[in-house]
Length: 447
Image (cartoon, rainbow, N blue to C red):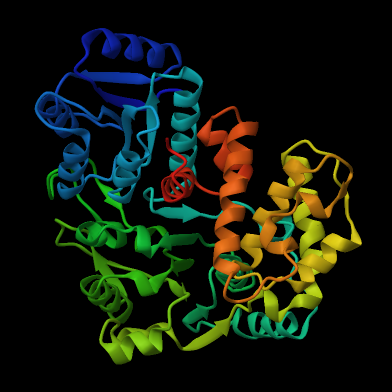
C-alpha cells in the first residue's frame, strides 16, 4: 500500500525486529516500541496510521492499552496480535474499537491482507474511519429498485422529496437498503455536485462524538496530534447521512440538535465558528417514536430530523421483485467468485418465495453468495441453499434454530474453502471479519 506509518508494540525483540523488517520491505514506515508506555510516548509525538500491538506486554496487556488509547481520544486503527484461535479476546478487543486482529503464529499473507484492507478503508473514508464517502454514481451501482407496489411507492416518495430541502428520516428493517435510498436522494437533489458523507452513528464512541461531528484542532486534547475536519464540515454544500441515528447517546443527541439548529459549528479547542450548509438525511431501524416516549431519544431532535419520512420496505412486502433481485445478486456473486452460475432452478425460486427473509436484501445477497460458492453447475440448485430455506416444516418456533444451524454450516464451508483464512472466509460469506469472529465464538468454532 505504501508509506502508511505503523507503530509496532511488541516486547519480543527478535519478533519485533523481524516483523518491522517485513513491513518495511512492503513499503510501510515503522516505529518500534517494546512496551505499552513506550508506545504511548511515540503515539503522542509522531503521526501514526495503524497500531499493531501484542496482547501480552510487560507493563500492560493489549486490551488495556487499547482502552487507554481510546480514552485519550485517539481513533488510530488498532490491530491486536494474539495467540491463534483466541477468538474471545479478539471479539472483546473489537467491541472496544479495534479494527482487526492478527493470529500468532504470524502468517505474512494474512497480515498484509488485514493492513491493506484497513488502509483502503481509510483512503475511502472522510474525514475519519467512522465516516464513509460514497464514490460510485447510482447509475453504476447495478441497483434494482423493483416494480412491486411497495417499490413503486418508495420510488415515488424519492422522486417527490429529493429536489426539496426537507430533512428526511428513512425508516425500515436492517438490510433493506436505507443508505442506497439516501444516496439516491442526494444524487437527485440540487446538492448532487456536493459531497455525500455517511456517518455510522452506532460506531462513534460516546466520548469523541464532538470530534467526529465538528472536528478538533491540534493539541486540544491528548491524542489530537493534527487538526481534523468533522463530518459537518466535510459535508458542507452537500448531504450528511446519519445512519443508525437511534443509536446516538443522549448527550450526543444534544450536540447534533445544536448544530442543526444553529447551522454553525466550532471545532473542539477552537473559538472560531464555521457556518455549515448541509442537508440532513437520517436512517434508523429503531422505533424512534417509542424511544421518544421512553425518554431515550429527544423529541425536539426527532422532529428536526423528521420533516419527511420514507419507509424502506421489507423484502417480504415486495416479493414480486424477489426474482429480479436474486438474479442480479447471482450475477454479481458469480463474477466475484469466478463461477459460471447464470440461472436458478424453479425449486430454488419456490424456496425463495416461501421464505420470510428476516434479513431482507442483505440476507438474500449473502444466501446467494454462499450458494454460488457451493454450487457445482451453471444452474443454482436447491441443495446449495442453507437449511432454513429448504426445510419443509419451517415455522415461527424453529426458524431461529434453523438459521443458527445454517449460519454455522456456512461458516464451516467458507473456512474450509479458504483453508482457514478468516479474512477470505468473511469475504466469501459477505460479512465483516468482526461479524465472523462473533459468529465463530457464538457457535463454539474456536476450539
